[in-house]
View 1 (cartoon, one colour):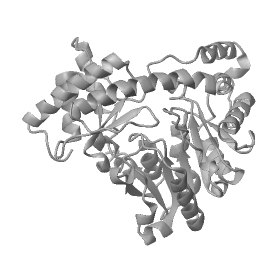
View 2 (cartoon, helix red, strand yellow):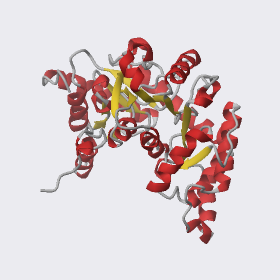
View 3 (cartoon, helix red, strand yellow):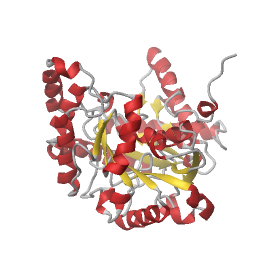
Amino acid sequence: MIQSSARLAALPGYPLAELPAIKRKLIAAGRDVIDLGAGDNDTPPPRVAIEALKAAIENPANSKYGFQQGNPEFRRAASDYVFRRFGHRFDATTELVPLIGSKEGLAHMPFAFLNPGDVAIVPEPGYQAYLGGTVLAGVEPYVAALRPERGFLVDLEGIPAPVLQKTRMLFLNYPNNPTAAVAPLEYLEKVVAICRKHGIVLAYDNAYCDIVFDGYRAPSIFEVAGADEVAVEFFSLSKSFSMTGWRIGFAVGRSPLIGPLTQVKTYTDTGPFLAVQQAGAAVLDRAEELTAPICAEIARRRDAAVPALRAAGFGVDLPKAAMYLWVALPPGVSSKAFSRHALEAEGVLVLPGSAFGPAGEGFFRIALTVPPARLIEAVARLSKALVGVQAAGGVGAA
Protein backbone atom coordinates (compact mmCIF):
# COMPACT_ATOMS: atom_id res chain seq x y z
CA MET A 1 0.00 0.00 0.00
CA ILE A 2 1.36 3.42 -0.98
CA GLN A 3 1.73 5.78 1.98
CA SER A 4 2.63 9.43 2.31
CA SER A 5 5.99 10.45 3.73
CA ALA A 6 6.83 10.44 7.42
CA ARG A 7 7.56 14.18 7.16
CA LEU A 8 4.04 14.83 5.92
CA ALA A 9 2.62 12.67 8.69
CA ALA A 10 4.55 14.72 11.24
CA LEU A 11 2.66 17.89 10.31
CA PRO A 12 -0.24 18.95 12.53
CA GLY A 13 -3.67 19.55 11.05
CA TYR A 14 -3.98 22.89 9.27
CA PRO A 15 -6.30 25.31 11.16
CA LEU A 16 -8.30 26.31 8.09
CA ALA A 17 -9.25 22.75 7.15
CA GLU A 18 -12.28 21.71 9.21
CA LEU A 19 -14.22 24.89 9.99
CA PRO A 20 -14.64 26.19 6.42
CA ALA A 21 -16.28 22.90 5.43
CA ILE A 22 -18.83 23.39 8.21
CA LYS A 23 -19.29 26.99 7.07
CA ARG A 24 -20.13 25.89 3.52
CA LYS A 25 -22.77 23.47 4.79
CA LEU A 26 -24.36 26.15 6.95
CA ILE A 27 -24.50 28.65 4.10
CA ALA A 28 -25.98 26.00 1.80
CA ALA A 29 -28.66 25.48 4.43
CA GLY A 30 -29.48 29.19 4.39
CA ARG A 31 -27.73 30.18 7.64
CA ASP A 32 -26.24 33.64 8.14
CA VAL A 33 -22.52 33.08 8.84
CA ILE A 34 -20.11 35.78 9.99
CA ASP A 35 -16.63 34.67 8.92
CA LEU A 36 -13.88 36.03 11.18
CA GLY A 37 -11.51 33.17 10.41
CA ALA A 38 -9.01 33.78 7.61
CA GLY A 39 -7.02 37.01 7.62
CA ASP A 40 -8.48 38.01 4.27
CA ASN A 41 -9.47 41.67 3.89
CA ASP A 42 -12.95 42.30 2.53
CA THR A 43 -11.88 45.65 1.09
CA PRO A 44 -11.11 45.60 -2.66
CA PRO A 45 -7.57 45.81 -4.05
CA PRO A 46 -6.38 49.31 -4.96
CA ARG A 47 -7.66 50.52 -8.32
CA VAL A 48 -4.09 51.21 -9.40
CA ALA A 49 -3.28 47.50 -8.97
CA ILE A 50 -6.23 46.44 -11.11
CA GLU A 51 -5.42 48.93 -13.87
CA ALA A 52 -1.74 48.00 -13.86
CA LEU A 53 -2.62 44.31 -14.08
CA LYS A 54 -4.99 44.90 -16.99
CA ALA A 55 -2.31 46.78 -18.91
CA ALA A 56 0.36 44.22 -18.10
CA ILE A 57 -1.79 41.32 -19.30
CA GLU A 58 -2.02 42.96 -22.73
CA ASN A 59 1.75 42.63 -23.11
CA PRO A 60 2.55 39.07 -24.37
CA ALA A 61 5.99 39.27 -22.77
CA ASN A 62 4.35 39.13 -19.36
CA SER A 63 2.96 35.67 -20.12
CA LYS A 64 6.48 34.27 -20.36
CA TYR A 65 8.46 32.66 -17.55
CA GLY A 66 9.60 35.25 -15.06
CA PHE A 67 12.18 33.00 -13.43
CA GLN A 68 13.77 34.40 -10.30
CA GLN A 69 14.93 37.61 -11.91
CA GLY A 70 11.30 38.54 -12.40
CA ASN A 71 10.05 41.99 -13.31
CA PRO A 72 12.77 44.66 -12.93
CA GLU A 73 10.13 47.27 -12.10
CA PHE A 74 8.87 45.20 -9.18
CA ARG A 75 12.39 44.74 -7.87
CA ARG A 76 13.05 48.47 -8.15
CA ALA A 77 9.73 49.40 -6.48
CA ALA A 78 10.25 46.92 -3.64
CA SER A 79 13.75 48.22 -2.99
CA ASP A 80 12.50 51.82 -3.05
CA TYR A 81 9.64 50.94 -0.68
CA VAL A 82 12.00 49.46 1.92
CA PHE A 83 14.26 52.50 1.65
CA ARG A 84 11.38 54.97 2.04
CA ARG A 85 9.77 53.00 4.84
CA PHE A 86 12.84 52.08 6.89
CA GLY A 87 15.82 54.02 5.51
CA HIS A 88 17.68 50.87 4.54
CA ARG A 89 18.80 50.31 0.93
CA PHE A 90 19.00 46.87 -0.68
CA ASP A 91 20.29 46.29 -4.17
CA ALA A 92 17.27 45.48 -6.32
CA THR A 93 19.14 42.80 -8.28
CA THR A 94 21.33 40.99 -5.76
CA GLU A 95 19.72 41.63 -2.37
CA LEU A 96 16.04 41.12 -3.10
CA VAL A 97 13.95 38.22 -4.40
CA PRO A 98 10.29 38.29 -5.54
CA LEU A 99 8.11 35.69 -3.84
CA ILE A 100 4.83 33.94 -4.63
CA GLY A 101 3.53 35.46 -1.41
CA SER A 102 5.79 35.68 1.64
CA LYS A 103 4.46 32.31 2.91
CA GLU A 104 6.27 30.49 0.11
CA GLY A 105 9.58 32.18 0.88
CA LEU A 106 9.32 31.55 4.61
CA ALA A 107 8.54 27.86 4.06
CA HIS A 108 11.56 27.53 1.75
CA MET A 109 14.04 29.08 4.20
CA PRO A 110 14.92 25.82 6.02
CA PHE A 111 15.69 24.16 2.66
CA ALA A 112 18.19 26.93 1.94
CA PHE A 113 20.14 26.94 5.20
CA LEU A 114 19.54 23.90 7.41
CA ASN A 115 20.91 20.39 7.55
CA PRO A 116 19.76 17.23 9.39
CA GLY A 117 20.60 17.64 13.06
CA ASP A 118 20.14 21.41 12.97
CA VAL A 119 17.36 23.08 14.95
CA ALA A 120 14.94 25.81 13.92
CA ILE A 121 13.18 27.79 16.64
CA VAL A 122 9.48 28.09 15.80
CA PRO A 123 7.16 30.38 17.80
CA GLU A 124 3.87 28.94 19.06
CA PRO A 125 1.17 30.05 18.56
CA GLY A 126 2.43 31.02 15.15
CA TYR A 127 2.06 31.00 11.40
CA GLN A 128 2.02 27.42 10.14
CA ALA A 129 4.54 28.03 7.33
CA TYR A 130 7.37 28.15 9.88
CA LEU A 131 6.70 24.71 11.31
CA GLY A 132 5.64 23.30 7.96
CA GLY A 133 8.80 24.37 6.15
CA THR A 134 10.98 23.11 8.98
CA VAL A 135 9.38 19.67 9.22
CA LEU A 136 9.19 19.16 5.45
CA ALA A 137 12.89 20.02 5.19
CA GLY A 138 13.68 17.21 7.61
CA VAL A 139 14.87 19.58 10.32
CA GLU A 140 14.09 19.46 14.02
CA PRO A 141 11.78 22.24 15.24
CA TYR A 142 12.13 23.64 18.74
CA VAL A 143 8.75 25.08 19.67
CA ALA A 144 9.05 28.27 21.70
CA ALA A 145 5.81 29.06 23.52
CA LEU A 146 4.59 32.67 23.36
CA ARG A 147 3.23 33.62 26.77
CA PRO A 148 1.00 36.62 27.56
CA GLU A 149 3.06 37.47 30.64
CA ARG A 150 6.06 38.03 28.34
CA GLY A 151 4.11 40.08 25.83
CA PHE A 152 4.06 37.09 23.44
CA LEU A 153 7.78 37.54 22.75
CA VAL A 154 10.02 34.52 22.08
CA ASP A 155 12.14 33.98 25.20
CA LEU A 156 15.50 33.20 23.65
CA GLU A 157 17.29 33.54 26.95
CA GLY A 158 15.12 30.75 28.35
CA ILE A 159 16.00 28.24 25.63
CA PRO A 160 18.32 25.48 26.90
CA ALA A 161 21.95 25.99 25.96
CA PRO A 162 22.30 22.62 24.16
CA VAL A 163 19.32 23.54 21.94
CA LEU A 164 20.68 27.00 21.21
CA GLN A 165 24.03 25.50 20.22
CA LYS A 166 22.32 23.41 17.53
CA THR A 167 19.98 26.18 16.40
CA ARG A 168 20.66 27.53 12.92
CA MET A 169 17.37 29.35 12.22
CA LEU A 170 14.90 31.48 14.15
CA PHE A 171 11.49 32.52 12.86
CA LEU A 172 10.13 35.79 14.25
CA ASN A 173 6.96 37.65 13.30
CA TYR A 174 6.16 41.11 14.72
CA PRO A 175 3.55 42.55 14.40
CA ASN A 176 2.45 39.04 15.22
CA ASN A 177 -0.05 36.60 13.83
CA PRO A 178 -2.13 35.45 15.69
CA THR A 179 -1.54 37.45 18.88
CA ALA A 180 -1.15 40.95 17.32
CA ALA A 181 1.79 41.54 19.68
CA VAL A 182 4.55 43.96 18.73
CA ALA A 183 8.24 43.79 19.58
CA PRO A 184 10.16 46.67 21.19
CA LEU A 185 13.35 47.64 19.40
CA GLU A 186 15.43 46.78 22.48
CA TYR A 187 14.06 43.23 22.35
CA LEU A 188 15.02 42.93 18.68
CA GLU A 189 18.52 44.15 19.56
CA LYS A 190 18.89 41.25 22.02
CA VAL A 191 17.60 38.82 19.39
CA VAL A 192 20.12 39.98 16.79
CA ALA A 193 22.96 39.76 19.32
CA ILE A 194 22.05 36.14 20.14
CA CYS A 195 21.75 35.24 16.44
CA ARG A 196 25.17 36.74 15.70
CA LYS A 197 26.75 34.96 18.66
CA HIS A 198 25.40 31.53 17.69
CA GLY A 199 25.40 31.81 13.88
CA ILE A 200 21.61 31.71 13.61
CA VAL A 201 19.78 32.84 10.47
CA LEU A 202 16.88 35.11 11.44
CA ALA A 203 13.82 34.78 9.20
CA TYR A 204 11.92 37.95 10.10
CA ASP A 205 8.32 37.94 8.91
CA ASN A 206 7.18 41.58 8.60
CA ALA A 207 3.96 40.96 6.68
CA TYR A 208 1.93 43.29 8.92
CA CYS A 209 4.35 46.21 9.18
CA ASP A 210 1.98 48.60 7.37
CA ILE A 211 -1.16 47.71 9.35
CA VAL A 212 -0.52 49.94 12.36
CA PHE A 213 -2.67 52.16 14.58
CA ASP A 214 -2.54 55.10 16.98
CA GLY A 215 0.81 56.37 15.71
CA TYR A 216 2.66 53.09 16.24
CA ARG A 217 5.46 52.44 13.75
CA ALA A 218 6.53 48.83 13.16
CA PRO A 219 10.31 48.60 12.69
CA SER A 220 12.38 46.65 10.22
CA ILE A 221 14.80 44.14 11.70
CA PHE A 222 17.49 46.00 9.76
CA GLU A 223 17.09 49.00 12.03
CA VAL A 224 19.11 46.92 14.49
CA ALA A 225 22.87 47.19 14.09
CA GLY A 226 24.39 43.92 12.91
CA ALA A 227 21.13 42.47 11.56
CA ASP A 228 22.63 42.58 8.05
CA GLU A 229 24.89 39.68 9.05
CA VAL A 230 22.09 37.28 10.03
CA ALA A 231 18.64 38.39 8.83
CA VAL A 232 16.33 37.96 5.87
CA GLU A 233 13.17 40.08 6.07
CA PHE A 234 9.91 39.08 4.41
CA PHE A 235 7.22 41.42 3.10
CA SER A 236 3.79 40.69 1.66
CA LEU A 237 1.36 42.72 -0.40
CA SER A 238 -1.50 40.48 0.74
CA LYS A 239 -2.73 42.25 3.85
CA SER A 240 -1.51 45.80 3.30
CA PHE A 241 -3.17 46.11 -0.11
CA SER A 242 -6.02 43.56 0.11
CA MET A 243 -4.27 41.37 -2.48
CA THR A 244 -4.22 38.00 -0.70
CA GLY A 245 -5.12 35.93 -3.76
CA TRP A 246 -2.62 37.71 -6.02
CA ARG A 247 0.26 35.87 -4.29
CA ILE A 248 2.99 38.47 -4.41
CA GLY A 249 5.64 39.38 -1.85
CA PHE A 250 9.40 39.73 -1.56
CA ALA A 251 12.35 39.20 0.75
CA VAL A 252 15.40 41.38 1.34
CA GLY A 253 18.79 40.68 2.86
CA ARG A 254 22.45 40.79 2.01
CA SER A 255 23.40 38.65 -0.98
CA PRO A 256 25.01 35.76 1.02
CA LEU A 257 21.58 35.22 2.61
CA ILE A 258 19.30 36.04 -0.32
CA GLY A 259 21.37 33.90 -2.69
CA PRO A 260 20.60 30.51 -1.09
CA LEU A 261 16.87 31.26 -0.92
CA THR A 262 16.91 32.28 -4.57
CA GLN A 263 18.72 29.06 -5.47
CA VAL A 264 16.09 26.92 -3.72
CA LYS A 265 13.36 28.78 -5.58
CA THR A 266 15.14 28.15 -8.86
CA TYR A 267 14.45 24.44 -8.33
CA THR A 268 10.89 24.80 -7.01
CA ASP A 269 9.17 27.56 -9.00
CA THR A 270 9.64 30.10 -11.79
CA GLY A 271 8.58 33.18 -9.87
CA PRO A 272 5.33 35.14 -9.58
CA PHE A 273 3.28 35.97 -12.69
CA LEU A 274 5.07 38.92 -14.33
CA ALA A 275 1.84 40.87 -14.77
CA VAL A 276 1.13 40.58 -11.05
CA GLN A 277 4.64 41.82 -10.35
CA GLN A 278 3.88 44.86 -12.50
CA ALA A 279 0.75 45.51 -10.45
CA GLY A 280 2.81 45.05 -7.29
CA ALA A 281 5.24 47.70 -8.46
CA ALA A 282 2.35 50.10 -8.99
CA VAL A 283 1.06 49.75 -5.43
CA LEU A 284 4.48 49.75 -3.76
CA ASP A 285 5.26 53.09 -5.40
CA ARG A 286 2.15 54.50 -3.69
CA ALA A 287 2.22 52.38 -0.54
CA GLU A 288 1.86 55.19 1.99
CA GLU A 289 -1.18 56.61 0.22
CA LEU A 290 -2.85 53.25 -0.40
CA THR A 291 -2.40 51.64 3.02
CA ALA A 292 -3.73 54.62 5.00
CA PRO A 293 -7.46 54.00 4.33
CA ILE A 294 -7.06 50.24 4.94
CA CYS A 295 -5.43 50.93 8.32
CA ALA A 296 -8.14 53.44 9.19
CA GLU A 297 -10.88 50.92 8.43
CA ILE A 298 -9.23 48.12 10.42
CA ALA A 299 -8.73 50.51 13.34
CA ARG A 300 -12.43 51.41 13.19
CA ARG A 301 -13.30 47.74 13.39
CA ARG A 302 -10.86 47.15 16.24
CA ASP A 303 -12.36 50.05 18.18
CA ALA A 304 -15.86 48.57 17.76
CA ALA A 305 -14.97 44.97 18.58
CA VAL A 306 -12.68 45.36 21.60
CA PRO A 307 -15.18 47.22 23.85
CA ALA A 308 -17.93 44.83 22.79
CA LEU A 309 -15.79 41.80 23.67
CA ARG A 310 -14.81 43.25 27.03
CA ALA A 311 -18.44 44.08 27.83
CA ALA A 312 -19.32 40.47 26.99
CA GLY A 313 -16.76 39.23 29.51
CA PHE A 314 -13.93 38.27 27.16
CA GLY A 315 -10.33 39.28 27.85
CA VAL A 316 -8.65 41.08 24.96
CA ASP A 317 -5.92 43.70 24.55
CA LEU A 318 -6.20 46.70 22.25
CA PRO A 319 -3.60 45.89 19.58
CA LYS A 320 -1.22 48.46 18.10
CA ALA A 321 -0.90 46.61 14.81
CA ALA A 322 -2.03 43.70 12.59
CA MET A 323 -5.61 42.76 11.77
CA TYR A 324 -6.37 40.32 14.55
CA LEU A 325 -7.75 40.15 18.06
CA TRP A 326 -6.37 37.42 20.31
CA VAL A 327 -9.17 36.77 22.74
CA ALA A 328 -8.84 34.93 26.04
CA LEU A 329 -11.36 32.27 27.04
CA PRO A 330 -12.35 31.54 30.63
CA PRO A 331 -10.11 28.96 32.31
CA GLY A 332 -10.91 25.40 31.34
CA VAL A 333 -12.89 26.19 28.18
CA SER A 334 -11.54 24.32 25.16
CA SER A 335 -10.79 26.66 22.28
CA LYS A 336 -11.64 23.96 19.76
CA ALA A 337 -14.96 23.15 21.42
CA PHE A 338 -15.82 26.84 21.69
CA SER A 339 -14.96 27.61 18.06
CA ARG A 340 -16.93 24.67 16.75
CA HIS A 341 -19.95 25.52 18.88
CA ALA A 342 -19.73 29.20 17.88
CA LEU A 343 -19.92 28.19 14.22
CA GLU A 344 -22.50 25.44 14.43
CA ALA A 345 -24.83 27.07 16.97
CA GLU A 346 -24.32 30.79 16.35
CA GLY A 347 -22.95 31.04 12.82
CA VAL A 348 -19.67 32.79 13.72
CA LEU A 349 -16.37 31.43 12.39
CA VAL A 350 -13.34 32.13 14.58
CA LEU A 351 -10.11 30.16 14.81
CA PRO A 352 -9.33 28.23 18.00
CA GLY A 353 -6.03 29.11 19.62
CA SER A 354 -5.05 25.44 19.62
CA ALA A 355 -5.07 25.52 15.80
CA PHE A 356 -1.88 27.58 16.05
CA GLY A 357 -0.25 25.00 18.33
CA PRO A 358 -0.89 23.76 21.88
CA ALA A 359 0.56 26.98 23.34
CA GLY A 360 -2.36 28.85 21.78
CA GLU A 361 -4.89 26.99 23.95
CA GLY A 362 -7.04 29.28 26.06
CA PHE A 363 -7.52 31.82 23.26
CA PHE A 364 -9.32 32.26 19.96
CA ARG A 365 -8.48 34.54 17.05
CA ILE A 366 -10.77 37.06 15.41
CA ALA A 367 -9.81 38.50 12.03
CA LEU A 368 -11.13 42.04 11.56
CA THR A 369 -12.51 41.28 8.12
CA VAL A 370 -16.10 42.52 8.40
CA PRO A 371 -17.56 45.99 9.11
CA PRO A 372 -18.12 47.21 12.70
CA ALA A 373 -21.84 46.42 12.81
CA ARG A 374 -21.20 42.81 11.83
CA LEU A 375 -18.42 42.56 14.39
CA ILE A 376 -20.73 43.74 17.15
CA GLU A 377 -23.34 41.22 16.02
CA ALA A 378 -20.64 38.53 15.99
CA VAL A 379 -19.60 39.36 19.56
CA ALA A 380 -23.20 39.06 20.74
CA ARG A 381 -23.38 35.62 19.17
CA LEU A 382 -19.99 34.63 20.63
CA SER A 383 -21.25 35.56 24.08
CA LYS A 384 -24.17 33.16 23.58
CA ALA A 385 -21.78 30.51 22.26
CA LEU A 386 -19.66 30.74 25.39
CA VAL A 387 -22.69 30.17 27.60
CA GLY A 388 -23.74 27.29 25.38
CA VAL A 389 -20.39 25.53 25.30
CA GLN A 390 -20.01 25.86 29.07
CA ALA A 391 -23.48 24.43 29.58
CA ALA A 392 -22.66 21.57 27.22
CA GLY A 393 -19.45 20.78 29.08
CA GLY A 394 -17.06 21.97 26.34
CA VAL A 395 -14.11 22.23 28.68
CA GLY A 396 -10.69 20.68 28.94
CA ALA A 397 -7.99 20.19 26.32
CA ALA A 398 -8.69 20.99 22.69
